[in-house]
Image 1 (cartoon, helix red, strand yellow):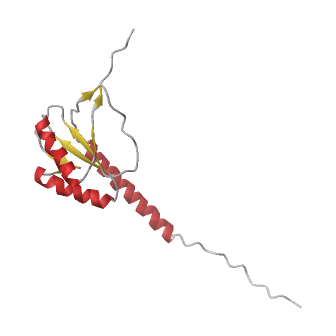
Image 2: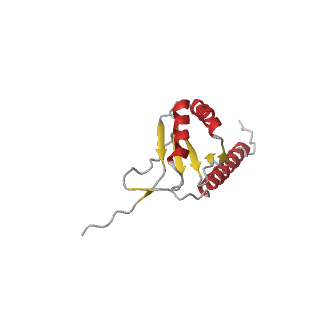
Image 3: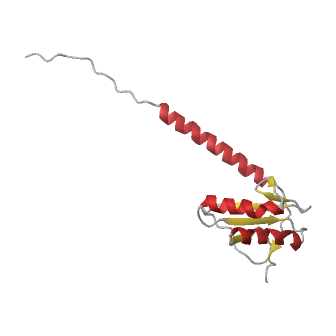
Length: 143
């Protein structure tokens, strides 16, 4: 008995979904890099501290509030009035679904009176995890 001989069919792999995912990842990383650069371009003369801890790298949701030398408050990179700060922080806390960290970056020339409303807004929004960004002051070498 003779077996019919058919040419081998090559199996093809559909690359379209993989290409779509790769383009989505490229767009995501470009946008996240752009947003991170926008925030880091905000130059502040942070205060120096002798004590403190290094910032932990974790996946906890974080919001950065910057206080410029003229007293202007920025939530992320957007100017925000103090009156709206508590409601926006509460929205972010609810959206995060877990404990939200608020990092305050204040210029060293800013008086405490400009930072106090931010702390009160955090308390009103139910945010308890508040940190301050500072430079580590160099300690003199001991002989």
